[in-house]
Image 1 (tube, helix red, strand yellow):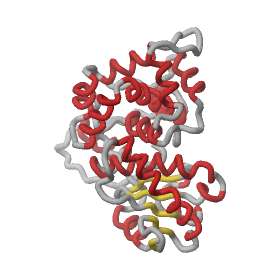
Image 2 (cartoon, rainbow, N blue to C red):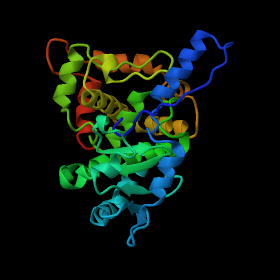
Image 3 (cartoon, helix red, strand yellow):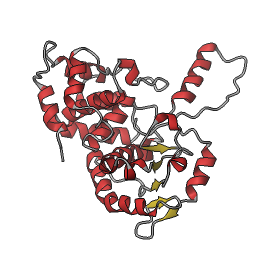
Length: 300
């Protein structure tokens, strides 16, 4: 996901705990997606950001007021778009924190991740200055992507491991009409898929596992793009079922059960069927893949 960093901490495990359980605990800590800052430290530092007079939902670090005003100008429409795609209002009004320099942003997100934005613990959306001074064209799509994560986090917890990464990132990219997956094109995503380099859903999602782009041998952007195209196809072909799926997830239901009840198929089988519709000797697509291209191009 565009915007998730790793937070390391020490755990004390009794000698009686089995090796398998120790591995599970370690994997959970390392892959949970929490911010690298201590929970309390991150919250305390963000609480010092000043609320923008025009819109207190936007808060800024010293010197970043001009950036905050640009966020305030696009935030209402962005919130409305997320709520439309998620079929539900935010549980609480979203707050966006704006940094004015890289040093500020890197207090919350490790520089090695090279992120433009992140939803850090505990479900706080922080924007990097590069969205204003180096990549201003990406402000709205990245804001939409991260707001999708924030919305889901309000109902299910910060980047919950109960939901697979491909769904987290595919939904956020779909909401943003490609934002977050914008460093890869549809053609690049299809080209990787016809060579069988695409994500796969598990027969049973295990919350202590995290399957990322490297699992499938693709770039992060291609992984996000493929996930977006798949979800766009689901939404295009049966929006009622897609809305039902999102609603069940927001209500806290188990992912596999919610998917099966909504689409009457296991997600692993559905994903494989989607990618099998590709001709393996060309980039041409047939069946639902053709619908995916149209849906991803700009669904309302």
